[in-house]
Structure formats: structure tokens, C-alpha cells
Image (cartoon, rainbow, N blue to C red; front, top):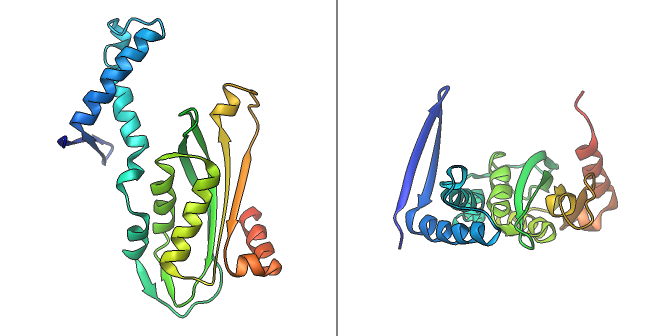
Amino acid sequence: MGKDILKGESSGGYVKIDRYNESKIEAVATHYKDILSQLGEDPEREGLLKTPERVAKALQYLTHGYDLKPDEILKSAMFEEDYSQMVVVKDIEVYSMCEHHMLPFFGKAHIAYIPNGHIVGLSKIPRVVDAFARRLQVQERLTNEIRDCIQNTLQPKGVAVVIECRHLCMAMRGVQKQNSVTTTSAFTGSFLSNDKTRAEFLRLITASLD
């Protein structure tokens, strides 16, 4: 097992703490040094000397969701509450990595649930999104994983998830359609069986507060 290293930086009162596994960083960096050579670059030139280590650290951060347990995130802030109307958290930032090309995709997630005796701290829903997004993903699976986690943990009357993302694997390579947006959705319970409930959710996530 590699040793985890904590590194902190302070800027304007904000302290950023990164956790790295030393052995994993070293192993991944070695491979990236070889990759640079295979691409025709000189990994020993000044601008690239620390690139393999930087990439290794970036990848470890971008995939740290494997170390998180999304259901435990929700369970840490579950409360009994007699509230049965829709709870919507929209415009949650999503940053993930496409597992097919290991290029980023990013956008917004909109999530709703109808409580059935329990509510959850609102900050936990974006954290669940991040826990699943910070893995190698496809948007379709990401959408279903978020839905299933909330449904199985909270046991609400219904869950709705809509994700809208831009994929750099489409914008930078292949078809090169820079303005394409991919939308995925997943529903359970009342959002599946009741057209009016689903329509209300879709109206709320597109409505402006202005």
C-alpha cells in the first residue's frame, strides 16, 4: 500500500488540501513519461520535466470518487420530516471523464425527490453527484447511478435526475461538433407514473428566478 500525502495551500483565507497516494503517483507518472516519448516529445525538456507527476496527480484527483461512498454521504445527513412535496436541487455543476477517450465532459445536473418520511441535507445531493462524477464514466450510467443511490438510500416516493453535458470527445475529435449538448434523464416512482409530477419537475428546472 502506498502512503497518502496531504498537501495544503493557503490563498486568501482558503486552504486547499489534496490527498495523494505516493506509490500510485510514481507509477502513473512513469507511464506518462513513456507516453510523452511515444508521442514524439522530449520528456526531459524543461517544460515537460514535471508534467508526468502533474498528470498523475490530476488523474488521481479527477477519479477520487472511487474512494467515496455516496450512500454514506446521504446517510450522514438524513432527518425525519413530515414533508411530502417535491424537493429540487438544480444547476449542480458536473465534471467527469469519459471512459472511452479519457477526455472531460461537463455541465449541469438537476435532481428532485419526493420525501417519504425523510429528507436529506441539501449539500449532500451535489456531493453525491460529485462522488459518482469523479470516476471514469459515461453520462448514461452516471445519471442512473445518482438516481439509484438516492432512491435506495432515502426510499422517497420518487426521484428525478436530468443531466446536460458537453463532451470534449465530440468537440475536440471525431465529429467535432463544438456546440452539441447531451441530455440524459432517469426517473423512479411518482416521476415515472405521474405525467403531471414529471412535467412540474421539468418546468421547475427550466424556470428562472429572475
